Amino acid sequence: MSNVSGDWRWLAIMQKASVFDGTFYFAVRTTGIFCRPSCSSKLPKAENVTFFSSPKEAEVAGFRACKRCRPKEMQMPSPKAELVARALEMIRRAGTDAPRIEDISQTLGVSSGHLQRVFRSVLGVTPKEVMDMKRLEEFKKNVRKKDVTTSLYDSGYGSSRALYEKADSALGMTPGSYKNGGRNERISYTIAESALGKLLVASTEKGICAVRFGDTAEGLRKELQEEFFAAEITEGSKKLDEAVSAIIRSLDGETTILTLPLDLRATAFQMRVWSELRKIPYGETRSYSEIAERIGNPKLCGPLHKHAPGTPSPW
Image 1 (tube, rainbow, N blue to C red):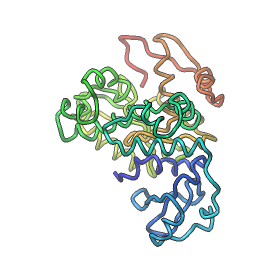
Image 2: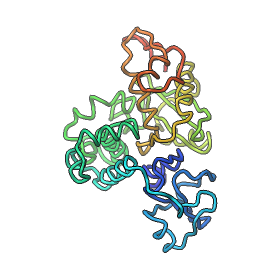
Image 3: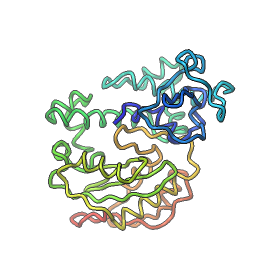
């Protein structure tokens, strides 16, 4: 997997997020052209992309401006987009040493409350949620090569409890099971068309374990099988199809939300949807339209039943 594919800038390009126009530029090595994030041209392969902070920097590197999006004619980015971009870059450079929100705010010259409000308005998630997911993705990479305990500490977790308490909702399984390729887990998945390309959603009986975008269904299946090499994987789930359908509808018209996890590649908006789904009390029915109202998107519709304790998950 390309390192670029997990970079927030690449994920902004995938969504053609115009809110970040002017905060950075991307160039495609195979064409020799550089563009703004919202360029309407065909999405390039991640491995062929490189980033620049200004048109001049891209030109010095030998790239020429795109005639379609005309990046050299870009106006200054919005203050909100610029603030979020600077904060995300600080988080990215910090590695596993997650900076305090107060420190980020102080460096950027704003209050922590203002920074969190701006994050929510642009991304739909808080800085802490971004750092939590970044830490989880680091663990997923480390645990393939090290034992679970070493991996969790090397990934920035202060204790095993910090990871294990969220394992079901974050991984869909225990950390140990994830390390062993999903051994003894049953995973069902579905693939559908979305505004961002092919969308794969997979789940165990405990929760969602993968949400990914890709160019081809075959490529997505291969990635899933490689990650969960010891699991029993089957395609198709009525309840999963309903959830995916709701996600796809939720993506319509969304242009300012970034995908933040490295491997899951879920959009921030999808994270909000899954967060609401997990809040549904056992045994109760909550319609997608009710969930949508809570997260500000009335396009979702249809019922959802949360499975009761002791019964198989519908996913």
